[in-house]
Length: 148
Image (cartoon, rainbow, N blue to C red; front, top):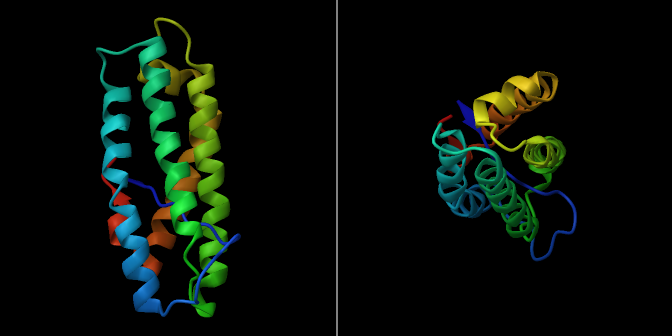
């Protein structure tokens, strides 16, 4: 399972939210991850190679970054701030990893080949995804968990 959540701890605008308010608004933003999940499934489709894989992986990354901007407008309650900030750091690293995978995708390579050729990066990304999954569960952001 891949958990994907993008929350940002800096650049916040607006009033500080309650735990329930933050969770509801963040989950609403996370619902948009369905499109990222669709692009990720397409990237993994063996029918696609090279430029198509790059394009789909970049679509996933772009959706993550848009979610970051949307969530950045929310101000979490003080007791969640450190957790959200730690999550932000991991999610930024994960999105950066996706961009790196896209950049490293060569003509004729399917997603499985890209993963295999970049195993150290993929291991780091999997480690990040594990931390994100835990953080998302702890924050109650169930809409941010996507099946892998």
